[in-house]
Length: 430
Image (cartoon, rainbow, N blue to C red):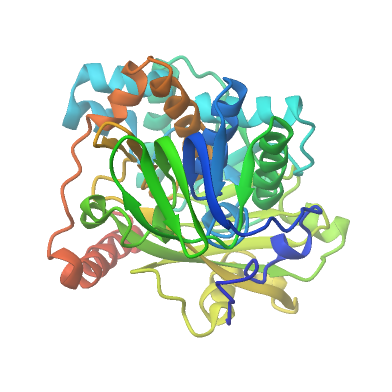
């Protein structure tokens, strides 16, 4: 797939069904503000909107277009919590850390819904998602997962044992499932575009096609682009996997990864609803999981796979279509209309990286595949720490983030070997 990084969104169903949005100008000359945000994806726009609501003057710099990266290309699933379960967090980092993160595990979901309602954002928001077990071991893990979330006060979960899963997904792959009635799915590009418009309605400024070329640390910080600069008291680095070379001290502790999505031709309402009768978003419980859902025009949007290092496969459809047909063999005659990749940022411990450099350059990144909700939480926590409420941001900032084994040279092959090991365990059900 050929993508023009300099000018527009990657070709996708999301781009073709995006709500109207202006093309913002590139930065020219020098501007000043309280906070400069680098990156106009979910993290950056969430932070910018929270800060604007608190009265800060904010400038956002985006290398391409609002939502160009993972925020405008992901599966659109509202999945609560993090990429590591709370019992793992408690075992590794202690009870206090687990309680602090547990208290925030469902907040990103609520923030999204608040934003959609307050600013009347048209983004196809639907309720409900489902975690599907492919074997008995995974089903037992879902039972434990339900108990764990209920321990943190979350009561929106329903177990589907055995054949009951067919009520929600017409597939023979699954031995059972866990339904999260409080989760959901949406059009992610339209969500970030809607929030960007809300930010601008409060006086915020966004400059597109303005990649950052460097930072001058100090008080203020000076953020440079090819056409100008921003003088800001504080900076938020929110480029995630697309932030390269600007803040090198944090790059060794994360790794770009690619995932791929295809979208079928319209199936018609009857055929689409036969596959997923109640319109839930679905993901399985494999280490390299599949995820899918129906779109508003009755297509099946189906994603999966991970490319460590972020490189795109030469033929996305040939990678993902067999996965789709394993789940839904009846779609063998269906044409694929769209195929695209997105790059997300993964950390070694699969927990997000929050922190601050030189007391006034903040960052939040590395959501490891659970970015839709956690990015929105990150935006709120960044606004909190800038208004003197530090404890919730610090709960994440205090997490240790070791570099990947093998450094930049060997982290990709070593991660691929690890993934092969866990894939084999999934296939064997052990």
